[in-house]
Image 1 (cartoon, rainbow, N blue to C red):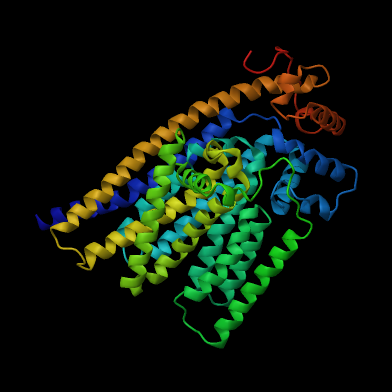
Image 2: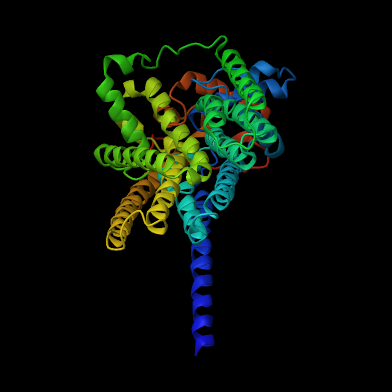
Length: 473
């Protein structure tokens, strides 16, 4: 009888490990199938700027400035290099860029899983599979649907991967020289992928200061000085020749409309859970930020033993939150609806993964250390579970809303793609879907046709133009 009971317990334990890990594989699979089904092999908006780089590469005029050139607020040096390599290997087949986005997200999930295993195992090993499942659901959310269907967004996935590698390196080596070197390399890579990566260079010194380290004194000061010097050097180089674009809102919107700016940041942070409503997103953003701050303050002060597993999640959550503040400076002037944009979910999702881990650490501390009575402990767990269920319902509603937007996008761009081979006589309304400046678009389409790249590659049969009206006709 005892053997049977023991076997049943072992089976249940294994099931509690296997089920969430199997479940963690479902979101990446669904996203991969979505990309295959809805991905449109047509360059879209910013990708037409990439034609200049392809042209210079084809004519032997390619130089470092082609990679370093400012694009909006960013200098996407590394994504441009990756996209150029893919373009040369595939005659610029956009579908390979979409595949690269999925691979980048898999890298983010893999690093998050390693970080979860390293930080959670000492205090709550039973929660590791479930936290990996949560990380998978967040990383492969359909709410960021535009990023899955737009090859240009590789820069955001590379940035997110750099952020996770940065905090993982600091956690793995506890701020020692090997970890610092890897963290600095990852942070620089993040900055050269997306402008938000500059925040990582500021978070590394913070991590060195507050990290529980094995050695301090002069060695710590040298590491701190190196981190500050590298960060200052990269930021100075990055901003050299930097210009504000004339068609973008003033960065002083923060000071003239502080409440609107703050509301924008809240919506930005909660958009992954409330994609259909600014008020729902703002509510989740506020709940998340307050919970994040309270749990960190309580654990840091009352449980010094939790500081080491807590640190990387503090840094990763701060990175996502500061990215919201940084984005708001340049984008809040467009209106709060802009904060619901799918591209931002990739970065804000890192905050929610961090928050979930921090909440689990806090609950573990409450229950295992007897901080709350046995009567109150179930109530605390019940409230936490209720919030997770509510978040799950909101997540599902956001997924449904995103699927509708994704399907509409795919239909529109399939139709616009039919106009592309006939760019010289197709209606402007149809071409304007792909790039708003039609005259510039036609010049770049002609150059692509000359180079036999992208939609004009010899390896692709030309589709007949079945409709010559704009999308939605």
